[in-house]
Length: 426
Ligand code: AMP
Ligand code: MG
Image 1 (tube, helix red, strand yellow):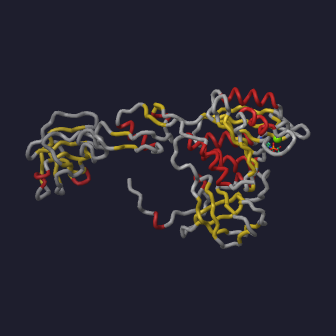
Image 2: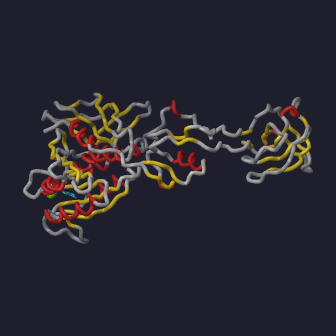
């Protein structure tokens, strides 16, 4: 039996980032930049108005209200060859280029247009530069718009699009095959034959992988059949960067993933008993022929998910070029007694982490904690890291791994902490 961090280190040390490629911009969300991207175009590229209003010479508004002549109207996308002279102005819309001669914009809310449209009364003085977006104020030529290691957000894609980029050099998404093993798995329609169960793991694991943005391949179900498993892993290895299997890594008579992986990895596979509960058995190895990483997860549905979180996700994030591969751990108050007995293992309890109205973190378990009790996992957004010992009473602090940040604070009792309110701006 080995500690969790040793098992994680073993896997991570064998995984390195996939070589960067040119990736179409619209496919690059969440990808990791491999080299800094430097701006070659200023944004904005020309001085333009940040308001609907009137382009003026700021000096002309001294002692407002003042009456100015209106010499034209400039719309976004339609530059006009106007020169705003002394005593003159031009009607201008947001995003339209500032005409020659003008050095400020008066917002429409603070003027009164003459009935004929030939004049405008400016009610408030403006200073040079008011309501003008200057060239390069967002991004200047030479600015680093994404450092190496940046995880591309939707806004980054916009920043890159502003540079006219159609593609970006980044680490590609790993291609991941997922398969379920076991003679008991029933994939047909209708009632279950005696002794058969439905395949939950493939759906869960494919979804977990898809949520990470990886390219997923459904490799289906395979029985406890050594030759078929050899054939499938070898074939999938030729096109996948990683293969995730569930089942067949325990000490049972037909636990063949372990046996097959031993052969296909030329003996370099490691079969581990990790000091955790659930998800104790785990196998990891690389196919000798293709170099594809194979993760042999346990078959119990909760174990498979926990094992994915602890081993597959960090490793494939490393393949994807992420610098941060582990999820954050938060300290939280437990609202329930957390029972356990000392057994030398770290227990990972299915739990709901939430933030209360005074911005403190709380956690409670979501139901049955056996490794086949998938429903409690479905209700959870976090795993309590319950250390070896006799458990933790209500009100004490525990460490919690947040595994589903999107489901944090989605319960109806959740409110934003007051300190975070009222800061929004358009
Ligand atoms: P194994 O690791 O193959 O010994 O399987 C451990 C337990 O998980 C057994 O009760 C299996 O029936 C169950 N199991 C294995 N694969 C799946 C799966 N794909 N979906 C749901 N349960 C599974
Ligand atoms: Mg099995």
